[in-house]
Image (tube, rainbow over all chains, first blue to last red; front, side, top):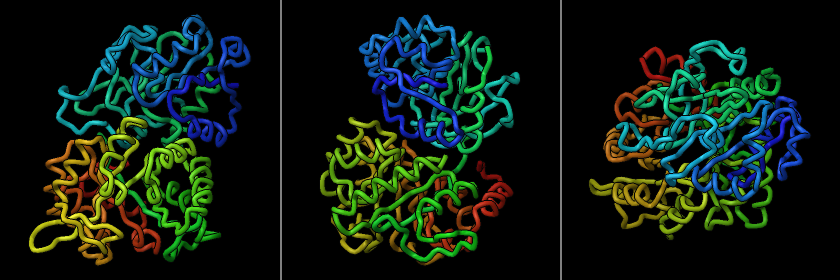
Length: 198
Length: 250
């Protein structure tokens, strides 16, 4: 069963709806004792990374998250929180993955936000991307990106530059796109996460 | 590569789709949720619902509709109509809408764009603009193109972007309903000035019109209603045509 960290950063209706569609059970985590009820954790998030980090700190759940050894999936801003730092709000983040979250502005000529369906490339096959075609399209909406790094990047995407569409460090996973809005492949990814074995 | 988006638009009144729909395999052509699901299965990249519900009391029906769509459809969708203040947008966001679209309300109160962008993020705010060419200049029109304003379209779009719009949905009222193609020249001009995505609307009659609008104006997305609803253009075939022309689609 998946526990969703409920720290008030954006609406989670779409995420729970997607989990309902694929018949994966879930519950909300508001207090640290509630982590024990679940074998997998999702950290959602939309909006401002700095503000999201503030909200997460306010919940008092940060220490527990850092100590987790079960599979954790950060989605969009929830993935950015796993990195060390974001230019959005010049914020120090969880530092689980030693990478930075940077602004697209001034680094590329393309329109910002990066909004719409873009294809991702999975370098080495990985259980998170089981039954998902290489160069499959996923739905992105973001103005900040996580650097590409061969040590942590599971899937890369290109928009003016190449960035991490998905990353992993140990039991922590992240996706920049919105699987809950990415059609059948998005649902497949959530299903894969729900059965992932470390 | 970022794909060009194809967006069917559904007009909804009191929770039911209006305008005829001609899908053979639909059980209930008036059910926006079933129609939305069909479109997502066919490969639509996104959906726009335009709520033309007459009375305030019926807004509850719209909220229920948004929830039902969010539950059953796995692609992003925008809802427009009846959004005049932050509270209207807030309830739609929490009901599962990915974006909201504002039109006349933004023209009457431009500050609404700033407020929505600050409260919910720019990615949530689509500013829809209806334009008509008069004496060689494009002017913003309200009430589905009936009421002319003194605001020049280009100026208004630039202002909307500056205030925090995340996307512009531009409908040419001169082209809308003609099925003679999009207003590619205007769209190209506007698109070159914008730093946010532009959705073209008005004039789609066949697949070639979509090829033309992407090749000539380089807009990010193209929207149409009746040609999809009546099955005159089938999305899988449209995508094949676009691909064959070298346009990146999902």
